[in-house]
Length: 226
Image (cartoon, rainbow, N blue to C red; front, side):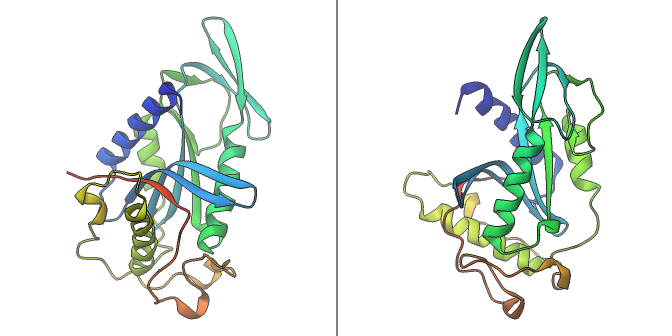
């Protein structure tokens, strides 16, 4: 990863740490999932009762031009123009890979594109494209309908932690093995949320209360709370 991208992702991690309460929002960074065509990297993944949030960070300055359907967007900086892939298309693929990996419906996964450089969005963008930390947190918190039971959130979180703890090349800190304190009983996931999970899925319709024991293939770093 280039330095510019790494710095941008660290800035986003700090925004998420400051803006979201860890009791309801579990944060993971640099998550790599297996896919049918290789792997997919997710900058930030937030697990909550209101769904799973994929956040794609773009550390770009200047004016940003684009639309939902365009294959490429344009960055204008100091009278120079730079083309880059439409990040909405990127998050769409990430969403499908994550949903398939966990064996859940894509309606449970929300995607956000966050420009965290000194940028200005010069064309009308979808609501899930933001360019401020306040806008990022506001967009996440606008989802208030509970879709996932707390036990399911814990299953997802523990599956991620288990894989992180099994990685020899990742330095773990004590906070990575913390569990959710005083969970709120939110009930089971809505019936329409389930699809037939693939072999590495966390749970099926007939085993909603079973603890997750799988989830290999995820790597990254769990957010620390101090």
